[in-house]
Length: 268
Image 1 (cartoon, rainbow, N blue to C red):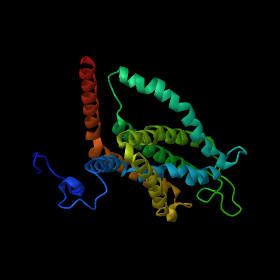
Image 2 (spheres, rainbow, N blue to C red; image 1 turned 90 degrees about the horizontal axis):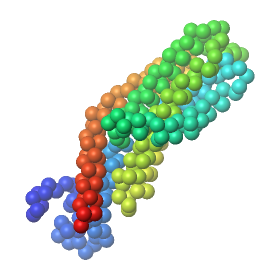
Image 3 (tube, rainbow, N blue to C red; image 1 turned 30 degrees about the vertical axis):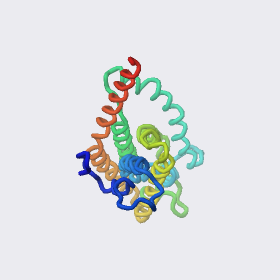
Image 4 (cartoon, rainbow, N blue to C red; image 1 turned 45 degrees about the vertical axis):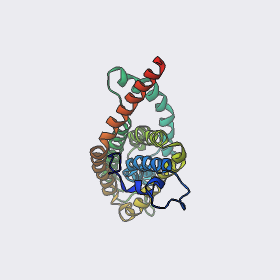
């Protein structure tokens, strides 16, 4: 406890005001307070590497999956373009219709709730991809070894992949866009670039995790690959919500306090 009766955390000991000799410190107490806020904001990014692991499937394993299916003569790597097209179409719909619709119903989708929904949708996308991969393996003529050697594709339409890309796009809108927004809004002015960099660094974490799946990212194990990624995302979705659900309440209280302060200021 300090002399004002407030609990002192470990980071407070970096404040010049609490140091016995602050002559060598070229920062002030405000910088330490802003650093604490930045660290608190970054905690919410801990589960994002798993989300990026899911998202990364569209640029590797889902392309491989479409190469095992009948694309109607269209190059299989074109399929991943469905994701950005869906995002371009869906973001205005979410901003103009879906989010305002929830607010009119008295349901405010705050950041942690949005991110949780995004993680859940990403898990569903991977579960759907596992189901499609199972259908690929149970369809002839090459069954569990399409596209290998002189083998061609199995007789199943690549159009079945489209819902997976739509689900991933929805997950991006809920989780990725909200994460960027949260990182920017919560970070103090002097820490915005650092917090944004840490958020983007979680993408690298997802790429590192993808290396762990190299042994099962081949035929005939791709069903396991998608299923395990889906299960991991589902588990971390629950963990994320349990650990950070109080952030929404805290943010709502801060907004209410700020609104009341502005009203009182206007009165004077």
